[in-house]
Image 1: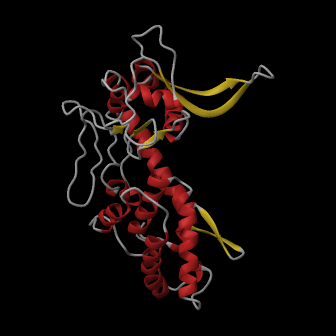
Image 2: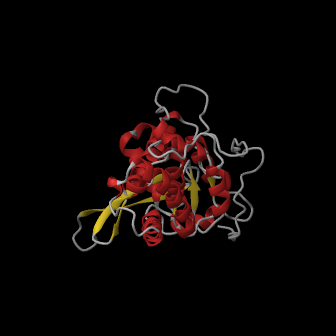
Image 3: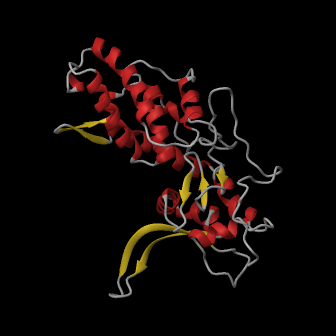
Length: 303
């Protein structure tokens, strides 16, 4: 292997790059031409999928320029430098649900995922966190690689490995079945974010107990996408504590809020959330794009 280039430009050659379709405020979902019957329709509850800031929301997007080995898809799920991550989990689900497409889109092009290994002490098969591997299908001498070795392989200075590793993900992002899997995953992320629980005093509450607007839900889901699924839990706990310090007479159980109280409280909670949320990439720009979207509502209950 030639000397790797660890800088990594993160961009495909201009002739092969898949552009993100944008307007001033949002990013469109790229759906390939051809049959659409297997792609779930976007519902009002998941409309915020269409408003994720620039750089996400492209179903065929793929890059390798940051600290991770590779990022791909609508949520820019990653293969980490140990080979695990949300992208191998997505690939494992796709392999289980659609083995034929998994073979044609990924395995035949060098990408595989493993969910089991042999325990060296017992000799028995054990489940592991999914790990993604790449092996050049045209190089019979190559061994499957993952993690940091994969990262270096992708970013080799002469660019020889870029297309062979990245193009399968870009092509899969245009396939209706893999698009469907991504959209289902995104809808699940929205549900998981809304149902995430945190403790205030002696009681546990869900994020959806305090934020019920589609815009607020989009903002919090965006943190989950960008900073990890656990990040909004800590951010909302800080936010709600700040809210009650500021509003000590507000009912402690949001289920008892009147409509008038919720109309007053929710916008303030979202303002406090912006101040209390965890570190994110391009945080201010991401926030503004969602706030400026005409497709989302600030009205409580609009999710």
